[in-house]
Image (cartoon, rainbow over all chains, first blue to last red; front, side, top):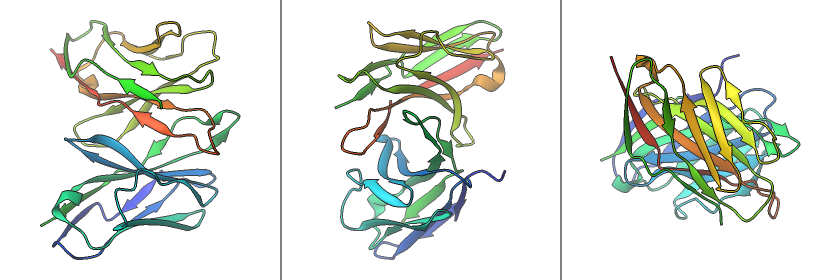
Length: 116
Length: 117
């Protein structure tokens, strides 16, 4: 199994540009999560999907952030326009459904985003 | 609202000794799950161990065990026989109960563990 795949691994862009981060979850997993990690704020949940449907997006910082999951094997997180304070490592994770919801999350390698 | 607290920003341990990383949680719901993840300097997040709130026995996975004290709302991670490769950030996390169709995951701020030779 290839695990959760994220692309790109590194992205450097200029303020105001659109950034799209991509994620391919593990096949058969029902849940997909997007996180942001910074030194200041730690690991923050941005949004998560269940069966391709967004369930909770209360962590999305503002309207500049949007996420989609058009099918079970692909999700995107878009930032438009990007700002320097968006610089962070963005993780995608997936998990499978259990009786109590889900158990462990399998994380991708992350995308390190730098906005100049 | 649920909350995870890790009070130890940094811990040091001698190789081959055991170490306990603290985690306390706060929730008013009876159904939840507790997790520990490891993040080495390379950046990936690695799942270590899981404990369900209704599980009667403490979870164990190899050298990792979870000291689950429900009344005290603590879920400490015990690493036995520390190895140099255990040096990493360790995160405690909780999966909340179903609420409005949502199982919100919450992570603590992490504890940095350094294992000395």
